[in-house]
Image (cartoon, rainbow, N blue to C red; front, top):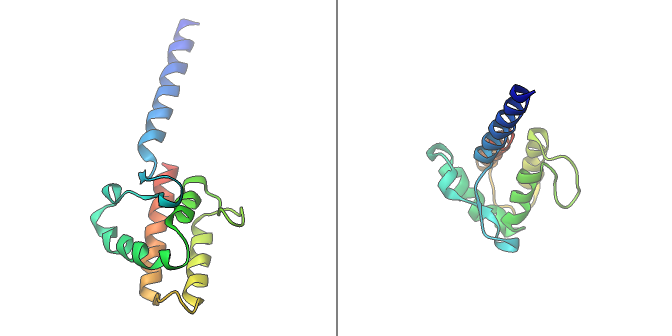
Length: 121
């Protein structure tokens, strides 16, 4: 019985610690909620800067952070996974005021997929 209790505590501790480390770091609250640049690998920095500059023309970063953090699009409530990210990328590219080209969309989609992967570790 004692071994069972110890093993359960160890499993719970390891699960909690791995989830705590896997989450994408964020800063701010409400309308100022954003991803922390600190936790973004160098290879994604330019994509992050593009996202910071262009995506906020139509919506706050809060919408994107919430979608990544919860796995649900905040406006529609639909699942926000890699397939949805690709669909949103296509949708955003077609918006007349998005001012984003195909390469920028691809780069941001890759970044968002990285965030999704980090949240499920």
